[in-house]
Structure formats: C-alpha cells, structure tokens
Image 1: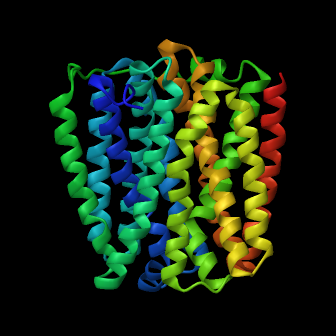
Image 2: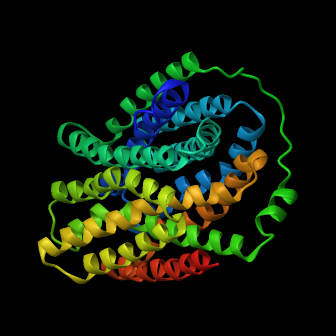
Length: 387
C-alpha cells in the first residue's frame, strides 16, 4: 500500500480520494435527508425520485465531454472546473427555499461530479500502470467512505439543525481541496477548445458485441444501485420497522462495508480475472438483496444488507479496471466518458422508477423488482468472462 500512496502519484491519488470523500458525503447525504426534504417541499416519493434522477442525468450528460477534455487538456484543469460546479451546486442546496431551486442545486452537483470522475480516472490511469487495480481500489474505497460519512452528516444535521445545513461544510471543504490541488499540481493550466468527435467515439464503442454488453451490464447495475441507495433509509424505516436513526446507520453500513472490501476486490482482480471477480460480486448482490426484501427478522435484514453491500460496492473497481484496459490509451478519457454517459443516463432512471413503484405499491415491491437487474448482469458478465 505504501508504494501506491508515496511520491507525486501518491499525493495526487490521496488528494483525489479526499475530493471523492467530501463530494460523495454531499451527494449521498440527500438519501437519508429525503423524508425531511419530502416534508419540506410537500412532494410525493415519485417527485422526489425524479429530482434525484435529475442529479444523475446531469451527471451522465457531462461524462463524455469531461473525459474528452481530460484527454486533450491537463486533467487538473478539468478537475478544478468540476470542483467549481460542485461548490456552486452545494451552495445552491444550502440556501434553497423552493423546490425548483433545490433541483437546480442537484443539477449543478450532478454536472460537477460527472466532470470530476472521468478526469480523475484519466489522471490515475496516467499515474499508475502495474498497480492500477490497487489505485482504483483505493479510489472506490474513498467513494464508499464518503458515502458512509454522508449518513453521519445526516444524523448530525437532523439532530441539531435543518437538512439545508448539511451542504455548507461540503462546499467549504471542496474549496480547500481546490486550493491544495492547485498547489501540488505539476501540469500547466492551459485551456483550449476540443473537438468532441462524437461520431468517431460512437463507432469505436460499438465496434464489437462485447461493447454493447458492457454498456448493458453497467447500466443495469447502476439502475439498481441508484434506485436502492436513494431510498434505502426510507425502505428500512417504512418497510422493515427501523427507527430513522437506525435506518441511517444501515445506510452508512452499506458503504462502510464497501470501504473495506473494494481495495480487496481491486487486488483480487489484479491477481486473477477482473470479470470473474465482477461475476462473483453480482451473485452476492442477488443473494443479499433477496434476503433483505424477503425477511422481516432484524438479524437477517442486517445480514442481507451486509451481503448486498459487499456485492454492490465491489463490482465497480473491477469493472472499471476491465473497461479502462479495453480502451485505447490516447482516447481513454473520452471513450470512458462516453461509456459512462450511456450507462449513467440509463442508470439515472433508477430513483424515478423506485419512487414511482413505491407510490403505486410499496418499497418492498420496488426493491424486489430490481433483483432481476442483478440476475441479468450476472449472466452478461459470465458471458464476457468466458469469451
């Protein structure tokens, strides 16, 4: 581990991981705050789901241009721009008095996060080669740590103040990250126009059947991920009888497990096959979510949640490394961004879907229907692994 976080590359990895921790703390704090947000704006679960889908849809929209610009400009420039958008978005959420202003804040946060991720992946791909799996594992551990801290942030603000107060410290911390990134940066901060080359990129990405399957795999998984994560605290509270506090702790546990297991998954993928590890994690997601939905016994709910957490969170570091390995080095940022635009656009519908089904039926029906997404993903990943 020490050789991965040492030197200039290690400092950049550490700072990027810190940026992810802070950003995800703010992005995913919306989920445990959702009951209070619904009450404040007097909206239905379906409307709340649509607002979260706006966040992930704008995230999807900027993935390709973000990656493309990171290929042709210093990645630090794109990272700094993304953090400006994030700060503006979190400040908008902190002062939102109307639902449209709240949605605008979510859209800005989505755009900032959607630019931040592909630029960061280009940066890490340039800095790490043989230890790329470990670097991406640390990156995903930071994602899960930030997601875990979002639950703690929610618990604090709901205990002592209102939900809007959660977003101001996030904006301030991101300003600190921007300042440190500018200080340690060794790249010239040059800016120029970039041809997006949409047609060329699209042709590269659909040249083989495996590319289409890979988009379907990631889209289905993200659809289920966004749908379950966005409403997990509400599901545990309303369907499983957890108090709001323990439902928030359960939400935190989902990502706390991932903080530990994602570096392990990355290392296993480096040693064996990334696709075989991805298939195993998908099987765990099926078992965990099935247990979570089917039982009302408190201990079995916790076990199901833990198994689901392992499967859900460890899928991403190994599938990202596989994807990056399939892309050409000089266009990896744009190609990865285009792929992420495709599957994030489809995945962003997950919260809307769960909110709609929960409004018409209940959250248990909505969650149970997502098991099929993981089953299809497992079959598709198995097919890719055998080719």
